[in-house]
Structures are given as structure tokens and as C-alpha cells.
Image: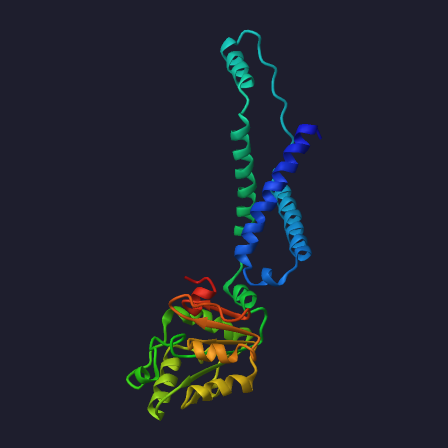
Length: 273
């Protein structure tokens, strides 16, 4: 390999590595926070090796055909060739093209291995096996126990994520209600939405209590890997007892603890919006 070709490959790999780091950080926002620099470097190195191998296998294996010798009496062709050789790409243009080439390789690779929603859910939840989740403000359109007395409506946009969580997590839904009729409305709304048809969630795992303290006690007794809630006071109280929490809030709240994350909605946390 010529020296110029080696230098070109090195520069391409550097640009490729930088762009790859950005792509991985967007794809794995939580797990990368828990990795040290050696682990991140190993992942990046492995990804680079995979991509270049994949790129090599995709390239055609046909040998290049020999270019026929040009006839002496073709001045127009000779003129064009001479002009082409006399005007090499400027350094800035060459650098831009190399950046574009590196980005194209990474984009093509990540498009071909785009993760499924199930893989994203597992990754985001750090492989947690038990999840507790409040209904009001997260699963239901209603934002208070008083509203549930009138009606209960499951948010259609959250269903796909909710059902995906039930496939590999032991999920418990819970809510503070003011009367028995509210419980019936919630269970009927969940049933009509098809939450109980997937087999991952049963009615016995939908828990009701009469106070916010009661809901907090439910969570502590169940000892989940993740708790999802829209009440900042509950989130704050449970921060030292639960491994991870997700605070659902329309406005981004101040982060109260390293193990507390926030998102405008459950589906947005998993990148579904």
C-alpha cells in the first residue's frame, strides 16, 4: 500500500471514530454513563472493526479492467485528461469529502442494525426486571384522582411502550383513588385498551390505595429496579430506596439525584416520539 493511501486510511479512521462516538452516545445515552473510558474505547474499536469488515464484504470483488491505451490522434480526450491531472482537489475540499465518506459508512451501518423497540426498552431500563408505574399522568390522560372519578382514558401513544415493558419486566401499575367507582373505571379503561391481552400484565398487578403515602409504601414493599411517577414528592422520597426512577413531567425538573431521570412522557423517554 502506498504511503499516501496509508495516510488517507488513517485520516478516514480518525474521522470515522469521532463520528461513531457521537452515534453511539445518542443510541446508548444511559449505559455510556456507567462505562469507563477503557470500555468505551473497546466498544468503539469493535464497532470500527465490524463496520470496515462489513464495508469490505459489500464491495464488489470483480477485478478492475485494464484501461485501453488511448490513441495518439485524440486531442480532445488528451486535453481533458491533462486538465484533470493538472487540477487536484484542494486540501479543504478533500477533507470535507473524507468526512462525508466516514459519515456515510457509519450511517449505513447504523441503519442496517437499527435496534427494535424491545431492544431500546431493555437498554433504557438497564435490564431491570421489575418496574412499578403510576397511572395518572403517565398511562392515563387524567392528571388527578378527582378526574378519574369522572372518567379514565388510556393514552394511545403509550400503549406500544407499555406492552413492550410487560414482555420482559414484572410490571405493577398503581394509583391513588378516592372511591371504588374510580377503581372500576381504571380497570375497564385498561381492559378496553388491550393492556391485559398480551399476557404480561394481569388485573391483580394493578394496585389501588387511598393516599400518596400508601402508593409510596407499595413501591418500597415491591422493591422494583425502576419506579415511574409524576409526583415529584414521591420521586424525592423514594430516591434513596429505589435503584432507578423516571420522573414524568411536562417541564424539565431539576435533577434531585443521580439515579433519577426525567422525560415529558413515557414514550418520549424511549424515543418513540
